[in-house]
Length: 293
Image (tube, rainbow, N blue to C red; front, side, top):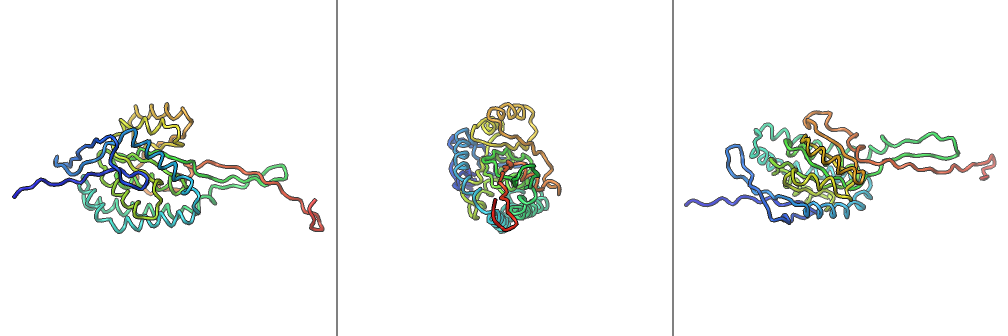
């Protein structure tokens, strides 16, 4: 007896939960053979605003964790991803990759989480400085997280590209709202399931699906977003993003890379999303007898 296949509906990942899109809209994802493989949410401006509020609420708790603890949590994400690698391989194959390509991408994604987990408690020593000054002060410059980062993730690298932009952002204590690949979105919400079952607090990473054509202006114009990372190459969107970002002087980064290359992972991607705080501290003069004067 024939039956109608029940396709999975991929929802959103906001604040550690999996809500349905506020708009009620979905699109059907097709494979290379024009077969339906899933229903995917079309996020709206309201979904983005909800995700931004969740991210901002999580910022103080996440940035306040010790760097070592953040490294432990990122390593836990790698462990959870390793345990579900077959599911990710299957989703990548459904979206057009060969099994060998899919296995390589999943392995690289696990390794990328481990790489940035290792940098969590080291980048501050690398990028901090003690500055020479002429007065009797100590002068220190140290990196601090910027806040909420909106990300338009790579279109053609649905898992590795997604991990490669999220990991350095949260390794540095920031929180983020991410728009996943429109044509290859399956791994994005599955990654949300991995994050939800790891030790990562809800709201640190929020993942939306939909079109950059509709959402890029909201990602760049929201006044409580501190920085934006754009990983695609649409000229009209780049122009709009630059104009909107100037409204509250948010920083914009264009990370259009080949994420399979070794140089696509480095601590300078963590540094990009840091603000440098400089502190002055007076030097107490000590006399020969040990008394202060």
